[in-house]
Image (cartoon, rainbow, N blue to C red; front, side, top):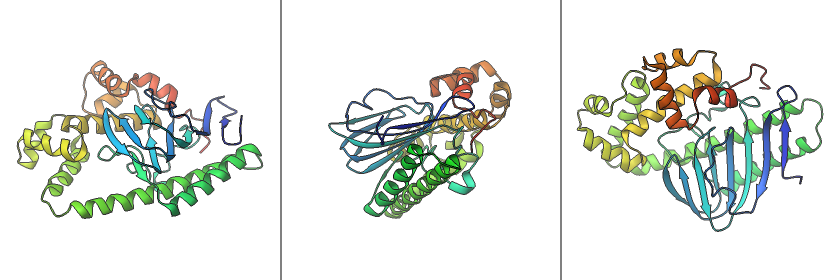
Length: 292
């Protein structure tokens, strides 16, 4: 194992909780990926196509991709120079530390934006520094190793989140000349407010006094997703959060999300997440002996 290919094992659970490695093999991410980890993939070199959640985005050199557990993705490029970080919720849970890091809904679980950032030179220097510090700590572990590794990971996540927010603000400024962003902002607000009780696209069209067909065209154009996709993904994000952080039964989670039939909800979850709620909780959820 090289200095740039290191894995940390939780001594209590014997799980892999942190893995950092580099890759120049363009085939690494060409097959569909559904990982049990939060993943950061910094493609320092490589032009191509990102397929994620069954949507497609073109990208160029120096892009940072961020994926949540079991989020499906494929990265197609003729050549790559990638730095990869996988971390488990047992090592660092973004939901528990949202107030400190604020990457949930920015880097991860943002149903309205592509999960990628264009890394500028200044940010690239910082990311390299944090990754080197993490690798050094994994090679030569000392007192408070986990605490230091978590601190460096936090700094990396905060830095990336700030850059993505800056880039999103600029995109919003450029698009603010049209009337459409108001409607899109309202539909985002309405989904966040009503997704537990309103599962039908027509419900949101009624709230906005617009036809379902017209609203569907807007969401497809600006978010590259149907309105049904947006509603479903918001429900799944909350379901995953409940499975991460609570001991609620699947039946209780289903009911809180507006599903009276536990089995219908479980089928819906499996269709969207590719695993059952029980398997998701077992593989991704917090063990109760968390390291952060």
